[in-house]
Image (spheres, rainbow over the protein chains, first blue to last red):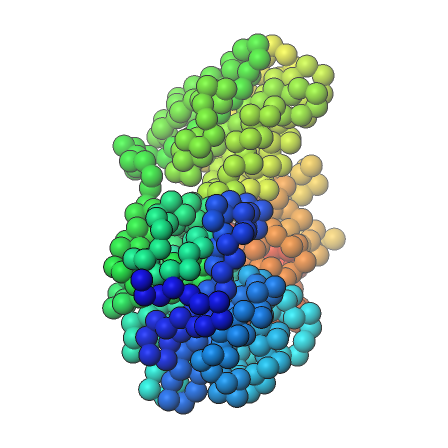
Length: 420
Length: 95
């Protein structure tokens, strides 16, 4: 089978274009958050032009020796005139300081958003580099590299590099996955479809709006091969993976009320008190009109489909009783799962019944703020069984949420001294 | 003490604040959608569009100016953790 990586040799993608990365087959957990059942690869590449050599990305620091052996098999350090980092995370920039030492004549190219990260990585070294964005490029004589600014895939600094003459896209983490197989090419390795989709779900999904922006730049390219920073090199039908990214970045569920704002009311209730408050919030929102309101008992559901719903919703309200001075665990389980999707800017609120101290509501509100939701209305708390007046407050909260979501909330003016 | 009025357009709330107040001191309290990361003027998470009244904010410091440039911030955008209100009426919204 062509393409099997030798221990020290580079892998040719085209004459003068080589993979010079490293395999890490024993890794079982990446960045704490990802499982890696058969390891990963740190993909780096070397592009030779008539006017010089470019190195695209490096590897994790501990794999530097392998990377340098592979690089030395296809280029001399004196030939290297450009080092491109598509992404500065340490698994791609780990060998950069040593590469810069060995290739002092090389110029470093990073995205304009990568400058702060570079300072953090090199700890104040006065390193000359060129910040680039879409439209900028490097002339290697008979070959040309062009940059595509693709921020937040999955860091602010991420970019892709396009090798015009070959139709190769060096995509950084985009279209990558944690899958280690020395056969390297997508038509030669084992079944990595799960890894591809798992990687998208955990790394790219929170940034799917940015994925769609990036696809606008990538889809028009006459792609012959995608060379990502992790996992198999996609030489067989690379466009299929681009199309899959578009599918994965679309809404997972068809929303029959797509033109309507949506408000989800989640609650947990031990004695029915927080449930009564949840129903009042929902009733108040319904009565205001113009909003599709849904009520869910968290105890009767699972986290994953709730996360799917939340990703699509405009407003979120969480009701939790206070037990031992805290919101209850299922609420935290759901709230801690929301980093996998983008909830920034959604409208949020909290409510709940309590016996003694009622900490759950402000704790949930703080978590919502931490998730970058807007939380303009104070939550409603009720001691044990909510009174009629407290249920009225809940209905008012629901009504105000609906008015906010539909742009009908009256503007207010307050003095800073009145703010808590 | 001179006062200013800051309107957070995304939540429809106007706050009367003393001169010298930074946007960060108010925006979270009214639940506006301006979000924060480092809170020290480095990460650019709190980039905020100044819809009107930008002249009523103290000019950006050297640090803020550099961060705005590094992040290619459009005109009339500021870091809410740094921008200090001087007076008048200012309308802001998340970038």
